[in-house]
Image (cartoon, rainbow, N blue to C red; front, side, top):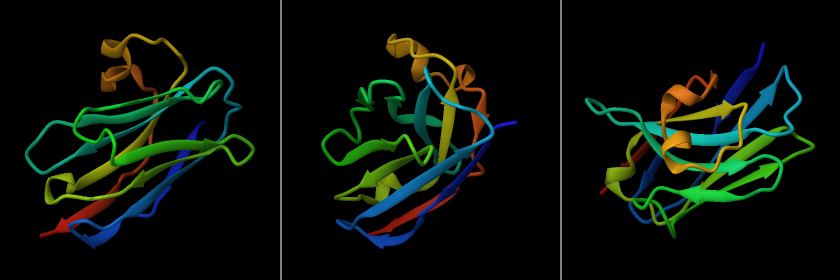
Length: 128
């Protein structure tokens, strides 16, 4: 049973920074995709960023490109989301997720249905 534990959310002013962490246990990850999604009130859960566990290859949603950085620490089974230049529209619950696939098709890894395991979510609130 895979467990994902997120941390690092909070309240920050616009222009500030936060770093989210997602610690995984219960499985050895070799070829997997680790991702971050977010969900604002009344909206659907949306893709933010993903990293391929084996290579470290990354991909970002256009809305966060240049401001957010996803990274991983393989020995710690942990991945991160460094969020800089935060905007009020980044306010949401952020979820980490894993997929037992490293398919490179964009339509595949932005789809929540292709992720087997999810964290509990951590709230990020950006004030203006």
